[in-house]
Length: 633
Ligand code: TSJ
Image 1: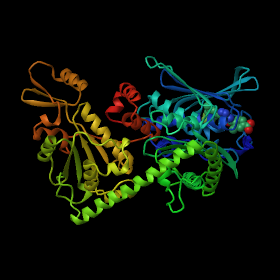
Image 2: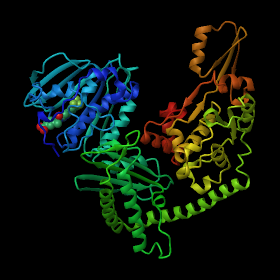
Image 3: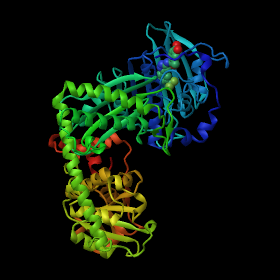
Image 4: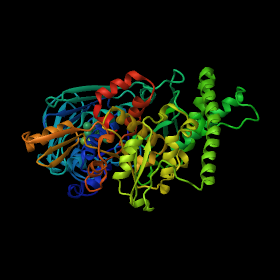
């Protein structure tokens, strides 16, 4: 849907100096994240051209020297003279803040979202940038440095192609480090491709030693996105449900498929921007789904007259869904501006989904029955879980809200000062108790193998001793009852052995937090302790070393001569308590790694692969991404 556009409509706001002074205001940060935002910003402008129906291919290339080139086969940024400014429109796009981002309604723009700040911001933060526009048989070119025009727009050749090509080198004076991560770009560009049916994005890494190439194109759009997310799971039925529709100028796409697991995984987008906090489109999806499944059950006698209706949680157990809406004036709410506010979207999503789903279930009664029956089992399990939860609650009242017997609590009662170490095994737990600062550090030992929550339903999870202990120790409750304001410790530190078993337990714990105490991770409350792997003794000095590389570095520094002993710790249990204190627990010496999740799709993929039941992808994953399996998501 082409906007009614001419050079005049580009709104003119302010100069680019402000951008260089306070880059964080425009791109979030000058870290690696901000750097990658520059690429998304430029690509999203090309995606707008694709959404308008004029572009089919986008090439993204990382060149030697960390130069990014983005080329599309669209109409080309207009080169005609801008009436107000008296310069070519393309120059306005690159030199005036907010130009090109706002078209005053009409047409959906991807750029203009969360950090959709416009090409001029990228230009301001680039040491150099060149734009080429191919249109009407000619190639136009203009060159900029740090946002300043270095040459007039000029014709540099002839061509029979159409399109726009941008090359830029991010300014190393602005960014902490100008090095692109191929995998980060691959992840995000794949997501973009899923959301734009039929668009092809080619990603190429030409850096020496890093050569790589990937081409994405999904004719099925978000339907294929759902299959992709469910790839490592066992689907409940083969076909992915898909609905598409347009009402009151709101374009809606919904796709979902249930798997045999218990968690719901819903990703929502507005104009291709990931709305991690949901909003009105998600609300419409939920109400439409719950109502339609219940109606179906009644109509086919699966739900008897005196049965309770299934709840939303029941019908969404094990669902993987993607909701994508396109609207002309999205309102983003919330602190992180990742929640859709437009209330008119809710009934539109609800009705488009309901109508198409009702039809789909009639056409595919086996699927209808499978979904309904899974939800019915979920409903019964939920009742059982409620009873189990009440039992825990009642028990804790009876026992005077007693903390778990295994917990050695700290004496300070102000959560701001308190931390809890979750330690693998009773013997390491014993050392940790002696090594801790009893005022501020609590210790909770857990068994070697805790329950894999990815493979168990809530009632079973609540019966697990380790999990019950964590819930009561933290004081927060779980899932919908979770309340971070009740958290009894401002840091939760996972301390496991530096071996494969330790890594496994850590993943199990993180999976539990991710699925049932998600705000702990979102708000950065979870940390990983880093016990040393070696202790090297030389001249009565001890050096603690955390991995093999560091050991090499140490020898390079202090030499090998006169080294008296190298102790390799197999587990925490081998460390004396004072060593454990000095290296891993004492606030002034220790290294803690904060657990963070930047990308929900990636994180979900990783958790499912690591913790799900298909063994093969797990093995592949761990060997390909050993560093992630270790720590990060
Ligand atoms: F970000 C950017 F501005 F630098 C950029 C823009 C980067 C890239 C890779 C592509 C683009 C871009 C812009 N591709 N295609 C367009 N299209 C337009 O700007 C355009 C062309 C024609 C008309 C028209 O109404 O005739 C309207 C527009 C918005």
